[in-house]
Amino acid sequence: MKTIHTKTTFKHFKYFIVFCLLLSLEGFAQQCKGGSYGLKPPADGIDLALRASMDFDNDLNSVVVRNQGIVYGANTIGSPYKQESFATAKIAPVGKVYLVRYNALMDEMEVKGAEKDDVLIISKKRSYVINQHSNNVTYRVLEKIDSEKENDLGYYISLEDDDNISLYRKECKKLVKRKKATYGNSASSVTTEFKDMRCEFYIEKAHNGHAIKLPKKKKALLALFPDKADLINTFIKKNRIKLNKEESLKKLIKYINTI
Image: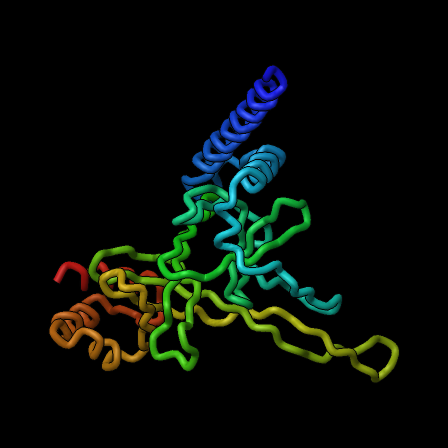
């Protein structure tokens, strides 16, 4: 009986230590939440708390679909990431803080695994929300409407969140091949480069989980709001709204949510 009591006490102490580490991680994340230039949390502390949380609960296992298996060649220029380094983020509905980064080429969210070099891919599921603290960006998983793919789920950056109309930005990259001349002869070698694609904007109605691409032509945009078309048309003209500019679209969506 004495031996059993000792093991139980040690087990309870171990979970108490893990709990303290998780509280520390939440504290670090809150320091970063104010914007891009918030206080940077200690890397060792985040890594320790991250490993502890993954070792002692199975919450993250339920959202991970597979290991990251893509390796880009040595002749590849640039990066598939908007932000190369991992940053703390709270994943809902898991409700805990992990280290994540967004792959704009693959439209995938990566999370740091328990082992130092492990990179896992989070499964895309409807209603998932990933709030990245260091740059104060919120990603939501939505289904793209009028897509050739069935259940075309992707990550969209929240710009305006409203129970009526919400506005999102979609960031994309592409991998292009190009020939590079070799010094000293006429031979050329092929290299690949990550290129930023033009951002696209989407709306979601009544938080229904559907991403509707915003047209760049006014007539097509007004067709999305037939009962408010006249008012919206007047607002666009009066305020010189540019349908391909983020600040103009934010202003427009704010107005639509008032009428």
